[in-house]
Image (cartoon, one colour):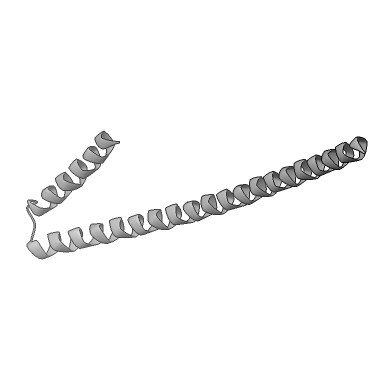
Length: 96
């Protein structure tokens, strides 16, 4: 992951330096830099929105799974409790 991040930053910095030292007028270079930064910003915002959406879906799925497991555990506990009460009541009946 660090290698990919370092590659990305190296590429970005190299591209920016290439534009800054290119043999053209400063206003043209600044305009190009501004356009590219705007495009990168749009891409970053799109990626962030996508990540937020996927994260929310995973959170919702986790909540549903947790509720289902808790419901199953509660049902199992209720069944075990009823069985124990039944066994205790039968044992009490047999003792008499």
